[in-house]
Structures are given as structure tokens and as C-alpha cells.
Image 1 (tube, rainbow, N blue to C red):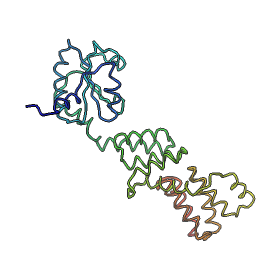
Image 2 (tube, rainbow, N blue to C red):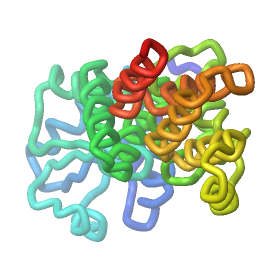
Image 3 (cartoon, one colour):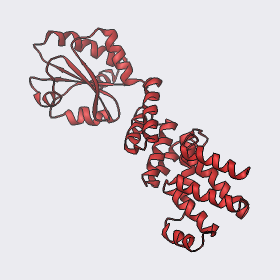
Length: 296
């Protein structure tokens, strides 16, 4: 007995595609649901073994993935672009891009694992590996590589707090405070993570800082003991991601007058340390210098 809507739902999950409909059926559709593309031909024996198994497992996935079947004899265009050299060839598309695939007939167990990996959340180990690589790139000063890594994690896990904080820090150092603010806002208000905390601290510094450093530098050149000018200059430098220079100016104020303005320099310095990151050279060296000043 066929239930009302069952056939329609099945047709929606599994359809015959073509070069003419490829953009809509695969590229655009994969931006919301992973799409599996089965390149086949009527004369291909292994295709006749593979396709029914693909259809079965896709139906059992109940909408987690979709299947588009393309006869390469009638539709050689995209098969050629994807360099399909033997059939059956299967590609999986996510967010408009091919992400994985295989060639040849496969047992049902392998196809099931293939679809489970595609439709389910990525393994934690995979995310952790990309996060570690992104963090290493960030610490080496490769902001572009770090940003790509954090963005890749957010494609796999849009709510990943570490990736949100890491990408926000990349944006801050790249001068895009608006995008950093949006990324931080995507994280839960009570979320705790060193990179997210650092991004929040850096945004707090940016909100309260002057955007111009030249007038402040001129004031300091005229009067090196102008603590107000030095304090504002430190804030402007911190807002630009120049945490080492900001820390240096704040430490100079503390060394000359540690109680100035209700210990404003020390309080600002701690925010700079948080923005730079607990394990950064700025923080490690700055804390040593601070201890030396306070306990000398």
C-alpha cells in the first residue's frame, strides 16, 4: 500500500538529472542538503548493481541526502568537467562543491558508511585537527591560512565556539571589526573559550579606542610623561591588533606611576593580555615585565 505523498517524497529525494538541470538539482540543492550524483550509462553492468543500492540507502536516510542520477551518454558536459573517466562514478556535493566520492560498485555497507559520513556531523577528531592547524597558522602570523581553517570548521559545525572566536580574531587583526562583531554575536553569551574571550576583549578595546595614533604620538614626543596620551595611544594600538606595542606603553605608565588614574594602565594591560591570548608572547613577556615592576 502506498501512502499519500510517498511517491512524491521519493521522487524529490531521487531524480534523473541532466546537464541542463545540473545547476539547480546539484549545485543549488546541495547548499541546503548534501547531494549525491551517480554518473552511469545504460550499457554499464556495475552501474546496474550500484544504483539500486544507492537508491535504497538514500531513501532510508529520510531526507538527509538527495540522489541525482545522470546518464553520461546523454549528458557528457558535467561528467567531462569532473573528469569522469570510468563508471559508475559517484560524487557528493555540499555547499555547491564536490567534497568526496568513489568509483565502481560498492557493497551496501560501504555505501551506508559513505552516506552516514556525508549526512552526519563530522567526527570530532576531524574538527579538532582543522582547529589545531588553524591555530598554528594564526600563531605563525598566517592570518589567511588561519581564517580558511576556521571557516572550514564553521562549514562543518556552524556553532563551533573555538572557530567563531578564532575567525573573529583573524578579522580583528585584518581590520574587519564589523565582521568580528557579527561572529562573536553568533556564540552563546555564556560561552567560554580562550579565543572567544580574546576576541571579546579585543572588540572591547576597539570600541573604546581612538582611531588616530599620530596626534597622540606627537603629544608623547613633546612630553614623555603625558600618561593620558600614552594610555590613549596604547588603546588605539591594541584596537589595531598591535598588542605588543600597546603592552609596552602601558607597562611604561605602570613603571612611572603604577597608581595613575586608579591603576587604569594595569587594568587596560590585563585586557590587552586577554585580547592577545594567554599563551601569546605578548602576554608571557608582558606578565614577566609587570611582575618585575610591581615587585621591584
